[in-house]
Image (cartoon, rainbow, N blue to C red; front, side):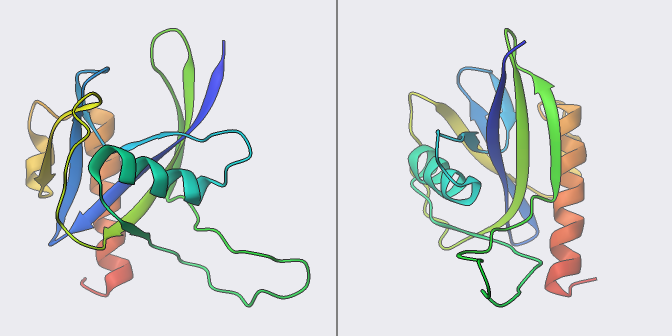
Length: 150
C-alpha cells in the first residue's frame, strides 16, 4: 500500500486547539497536508496552514543547539508520529505543536468546510474523532508544560 508523508499542526491559543472540518474526509482534524518532494517538513507545515487557513504559525521547538559543523538549519521535533489509513493509501503523519502569529483566519473553501477552537473538554464532543481527541489532549498538555502553565 502506498504511504504518503504528511504534516499536521495542533495550533494552540488561549488553552484551545484549532481543528478544521475537512471537506474531503468530512471529519474534524488538525490542519495540514502533504510534504512535497524536496520539501522540508517545517516548510510544508507552514505552507499548508497558510494555504488552508491564511494563517501564519510558529512551530514550537524543544531543541535549540548552535548551528555548528555541517548543520545548516535546525528543525522542530514532531511531538507525535503515526501511520493512519485514508482509504486507498496510508499517511505517515508528523504532528507538530504550534502557536498562531494572529487569530485572523480565512478558510480555503474548496478544502475546509469550517474551523473551530476546542478547549480540552470540547475535544470530548462526538464530532471529534477519537484519535484527534487523544492527540489533541496530548498537545494541550504539552503546550501547558512548555509554556510553564502547569
